[in-house]
View (cartoon, rainbow, N blue to C red):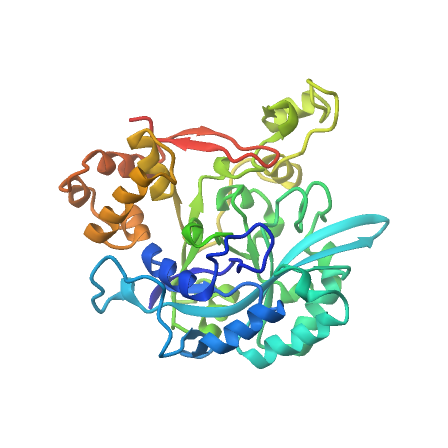
Length: 421
């Protein structure tokens, strides 16, 4: 079965998240977006863990659904016929941990995603971590725990679970972050490195950038939204083509393409990496942004104030790269680089993406054509052109063909991608 998974989200118990990020809203928006499998996020938080236990029940092995009496908090605005588009919302138990600790005389700040197939495993991990830090303080808890030791806790308490380093290039909090990370997976995880088989690329990088680094060849690359509000579900996601259960999904990450050439890891859905808020180097307070080559000329210092620039993802990738062009392992997933539908509509209508004008048109299109990701990736351009908003068809065509104008993000400021009709 081909299905779309967004495995990194946050609940309303994480900092800087929408109060709408509750389970019924997440279920509704996953269907509106066309995402079949959604991470729960935040299972280490006591209140969210209790809510998950009260609202979810087992479905396919290792996956969960809303209990029978609980419904998504909005009715689907399009007819749901039996197809891959309309699989009822499913969840996988997940959480993100922020590890801040000292190693080799340097402060390390690494974020990790943890996935488990059952509540018993989640409970054991939660109990092990509760003696280290305050899990109730944040849905994404900050722990003074070496990420190597975090992985050890996962392996001991949830042997069928797995850990994925999150948004691996983000400057401040990631495996390869320019401010606090490591240069290799092996340096970070030591004798447990073989248990890492997938990496999350993050909004500011894409597979082409990661495939400049030969040391990453053995890893599957996945993409997720890291959304802090339900409306952002699916802005990045991963497409699988395998049996619809936890264990087959994990196996697909371990062996993305089988001996017969079948790709179990079929595609990733990406932000254009320039839209990510740490793609280029820069200094937000001085509104200064530059590419890696200019940054090196400036010796990493802001020409406005003289303070160090925040070194972005592209610079960090190039620091570790040992190739001039990306090399993809055999059977690598397809890559869909997209602009979210609300952003496309905002540009076409000349208003902000969250305005009533945009949302009215958004719901009209969803009702007419189906889930957002279907519109952006699968819908024939001719069908879109037949609607009452034909300029959308040309905009989607340009996005699919990478005919867009890009202004890179930097130092926490999102970039912009335009179709320029």
